[in-house]
Every structure is written in C-alpha cells, then in structure tokens.
Length: 572
Ligand code: 9G3
Image 1 (cartoon, rainbow, N blue to C red):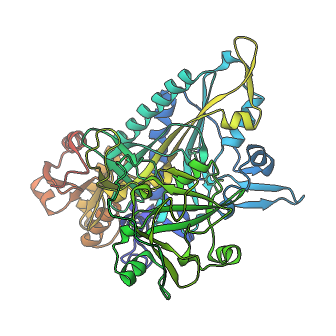
Image 2 (image 1 turned 135 degrees about the horizontal axis):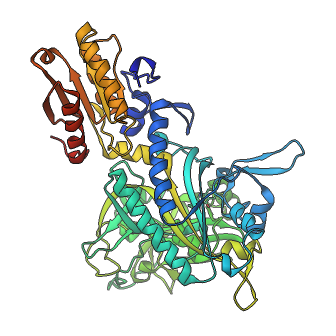
Image 3 (image 1 turned 180 degrees about the vertical axis):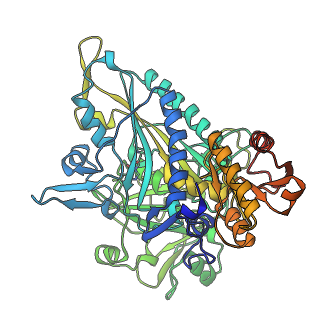
C-alpha cells in the first residue's frame, strides 16, 4: 500500500483522557478513534491488526474442530427470562424495545441464544460433541469504561460453546481449548499465565483465565514457584485461623463522631486496622446479608455470591441502609442485630476484643468478642487473596503480578440446558440436558494488551504476526533516483507477497521515521544517500540495523532472515 493512499492520521499529542499506553498510542497512531465512552471506530491500521488477531484465533479454533457461526446481536428477553438472568445484571445489560414494544437486549454474551439455537438442531448423542463459535460485537454498559479498548462498552469477542453427552467429553474439549488458547498467546508473542479463575455468574465448576502480564492490567494474578496460579477473585485463603490469646475485655459503646472509614476508626481509637471487623451489607434476591471481614482485608464479592448462591447480589446503597437499618453506612455492626443472615470470614473466628460499628450514628463497640456479644450464622472464606497469603497447594507465600484477561474458559455443565429445556436423546433413549462448556477470547482487548506489553517511548512495537504491515519502504526524499529505486523495490516485494507499506509522502525523513516508529512497523528499509554507494539500510523496530546491498533479491533475503530472528520483546 502507498502511504499517500493510506488513511492513517497520526497525532503528535496524546488525548488528554488517556490513562494507559495502549489508549494513547492506538489513538496517536491512527488505529482507533473514540466515538463515545467505551465506543471506538477502528481505522484502517486498526482494522488490519484486528483481522490478523481474528485470523490467528479462527485458525486455532478451526484446528480443534470448532464450527464458526454468526449469531444475532439483538436477543429476545424471553431467552434471558428462561435462564433466569434477565434481572441479574442491572444497568450493565443494554435493554431496548422494538416497534411492537417487545423487549430485547444487545447481547453481552450468547449462552442463552446458542442453547436455544441447538435445541432444534442437535437432538441425538450421535451429533455430540459439537463446538460452535462466533467472532462478533458484544455490548456491556460498563459502569466505568476506561483504558480505551481494554475495557470498552462495545467490543469484539470470540465466544464459543460446546455441547456434550458426558463430563469426560466436555473435559476433552476443555483441554483442547486450553491448548488452542496457549497457541494463540504464543502466536501473538505475549507473555502470559494460565490461572484458575472464578466461574462467578456463569455458574458451572471449573474455569481458567489466560492473562497477558501488564502492570496496567485489572486482573491480579497470584502465583507460586510450585506452579500454582490463580486470579485473586478465585484464590481461596487457606491460612490457619490465628487465635489471639488475650483475655476478653468488657464490651464498651464508644462515641466516635464522624469516623466512618476503617482507617479513620483505627486512628481515632488508636488501634491497628486488623483489630477492626468491617461490616458490609449486601442485597440479594431474598433480602439483605451482613458480611464480616477483618479490617485489613477486602471482601471478595465473587466468594460471597457463590456462598449464598445469588449472583444478583449488590452492595446495599447508603440510602437503603439508612432507610432499612436506621444507621449511616460507617457505623454498621453485628452486635444486637436480629433478622439478617450474618456471614463472617473464618479469620474473624480467632480475633479478640475487636472493634465493630455501634449500629448507631457516631458510635462504635470496642472489645467485642464472638460468642459473648454476637454469633454469626455462618463462617466461610470471604476475603480477596493477596500477595504473601499462603499458597493453597504448598503454603509458601504467594507472589502477585498484574495482568489483562484475554481468554476465559468455563465448564458450565447443565446450568443453561436445564434452565432452557435443551435436551438430546442419549444412547439409552433418555432425553438428557446437554453438558456444556463456553470459551471466550477478547479480540479487540488483545490489540490493547499487545501494545501494553510491546511499546517504547517512540511508539508501538507490533509482533510480526499482527503488524498492520511487516515492512515500510522509506525514501529519505523524493529525489528522482531514490523514488525510482523505492518504487521498483516496492513492486518487487509486493510480487513476493510481502505486506509492504511504501512511504511515498512528500514529507521530511524525520516525520517518516517517527511515524514508522509510532505505528510500529517491524522493519524499515531506508533508501538514502548510501544508495549511491549501492546500499540501503534495514532497521528493525526493536533497534537492530543492518546495511544491505541495493539489490532486490538480497534485500528480500535479508528481510526473510530478519523475520526469522525478530523478537519484539528484545530491544537491541
Ligand atoms: C450479562 C452482562 C455482563 C456479563 C454477563 C452477562 C460477563 C456474563 C460472563 C460471561 C461468561 C462467558 C461466553 C464467552 C466467554 C465468557 N459479563 N458474563 O455472562 F448480561 Cl450485562 O460472559 N460467556
């Protein structure tokens, strides 16, 4: 392609609201344009990269025998009412009505739709296992879309669904997707981890995430040298309960005006945060829950939702708490509370003489003890695991890395097939609900993750496998014999099937060089004054430079050798 015909508007300045490198560089490089919060247009360079990511994902899916389909984005509400999830996601689900006032949703995922689809397609065990997948846009009205394509409201996902007549068969397909997803990560040149993850809302038992390491990532990966790794939402806290030995002191109700946060209470009462028990109120389908965790730990909503088996659980609002408990949110506590299920984190069991809210504005209880002052209804692991916690496998202290979740695979079981009555005839002539799996890959998010891992102060450093062009030909001026050589080299490489961009613009070499570095083309062939001595320069985006005879075959040869050796992570 000739640069003069390419619509690739590069920008000097980063958009004011860009928070992470990929957001800044994909906009400055002319790959994407923001249309609204979390809504992006992919410009020509961006579209080329997306199509290459999609092709890699498609090839790996086809390799494991998955069948590509394309389902509608708009979904009738009935399907979600059948699965019981129509009210589970609140405002995150984009709902609309058609001209006949019928309810629909813009699809955030397709479990319901595909399970409805196959009930009229697959009806015998002979047709199983079957995996169907699509690459299509999804909509999730995220509360805070941010970081560009890393957390968008409209995004491109590969979502696959498999149907089985046994868990063994599901396990085979699950393993095949694990391998396929590892291949995808390898072909994208990303540094990554496969981590145990929570299956949260989606139900089912087992799930794994494929996470690309990045300090800007929203996922916290806890890992251990023994090989264990898990997403902090999922990692169980397996530490022993530490039973404090101090004597129980008499409980006291203490005046603590305007001290709401745990830190404020700790400073005001001059106690360490870990001597405070945090009280959090959640609202589910059948009322409120009171959850208790140590003051220095975060409550893990995924664990609480799983424990009470209610995925619609949301944090109760200060207004609801004031209305239904008559206490401002900072002064909640379990002492003297009736008619609400109290679920406490196991570690609270060992605490002595701790502080809780006084269930009255501006008051806290000090020297509170379990048993004497209150008894929780249940004990369970409720905390978000963190660095230093014992490894669930070998108990050594866990380490943590940040990352971007790109792939997520789930063993669903019969959650959707039972809810939607999707059954097949098994070998004994019995009608059975399909055993299912589902497999997601964030296509548009992948483009951002690659830039997060592979960029420098000059711009993006695309891996060869997804670079919009592998090579850019840069004559340093439009002087006649430089342009003649450059044009003929361009046509020669095109005939060789090279994805080459010819920078035929009448701009300064400085602009050409900085644009080439910004948009991250792996190889730049500079046609300059050395042409008179019979040479051109090939510069790798990673810094390596070689001088090559100004001979088309030799240049082509040097490019192929370069491709063999090129590693975007290796800066020269
Ligand atoms: C919703 C909304 C947001 C959602 C979901 C439903 C996440 C929802 C989980 C999944 C699981 C897998 C198939 C592809 C891979 C991921 N956010 N999930 O179900 F209504 Cl608003 O989507 N689905």
